[in-house]
Image (cartoon, rainbow, N blue to C red):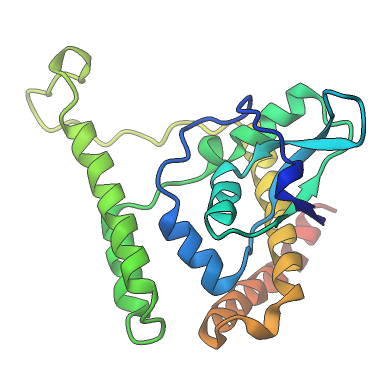
Length: 219
């Protein structure tokens, strides 16, 4: 984990899976809380052969948000010698294994934190609008590619089988990312909002409680 000057990051979109879009909300969050999640970089040689520059593997939006804030460096995990295959696995870990939040989920979160974290309201409202737009886009899918409507209510179907190898790999990647985020938060822990620190500690206590059970099953 290290701070990397933004000017040392190459404008290379190889691992960018979507357009960065509007990062103003993210910039507001980083400006208030600091950069809690490091970006993933790997070193690349400069074109002139002098010094080093870095290629973004994951975290393009965070980089753009920091530039919007006119910051001069980014907190990053630098992966020396990271091969292309592993870099692609790291870049795909978010969209492949992350679960999207539904509008109902976001409404429940907003209701829960309304009196504790008033400043979170606009960010959650914006996230809900984005989730609603995605749902509306799915509802407007052309009939030619939509599944035909059943004549009668279908019987409940079992959940699709989960590939154990893919699941454990994704879980390991997310745990690795969490470790980095907690380490980054430690550096400015006292400056974070008290209610936010409380929520983080509640989740970490749960992990501490479940760890002995996982270790027992691994014997």
